[in-house]
Structure formats: C-alpha cells, structure tokens
Image 1 (cartoon, one colour):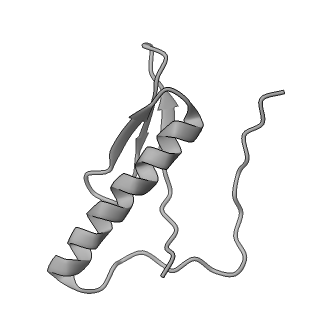
Image 2 (cartoon, one colour):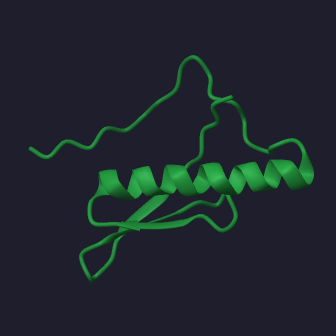
Length: 76
C-alpha cells in the first residue's frame, strides 16, 4: 500500500540537499540534486517503514488517497 511521507528539504552551504521527515523517525537523506535527494529519501523511508511495521504492526501514516497535491519543481 502506498503511503504519503512529507519531507523537509533544505539546501546546505556545501551545495547539497538534505531531506528529513517528522513522520518517519530516523529518515535522513542527502543528494546532489533535489531529485536525487527525493529518490534516496524514498528508499530510506521504505526501509525504515518496513522495519517499523515488522516491530509494531500497523503504520501510523495515512494511505495515499486518489487525489492529493504534489509540488513540482521546474528549472526555468
């Protein structure tokens, strides 16, 4: 089942991007681009949620609905 995880992404002074989440404890991902950071964060979140589900059973995240907002970053 797909779940929505909100990420906080910030550009660090070193020029890389850092992603964290208040919803998935321990989620930290870093990438050279926003796209790369999101992809890494998605993989990390999946692994962390799998472990959490094994330990605790149900996940506290709401399932993805049929309709939701998704920001798109465009380099113009």
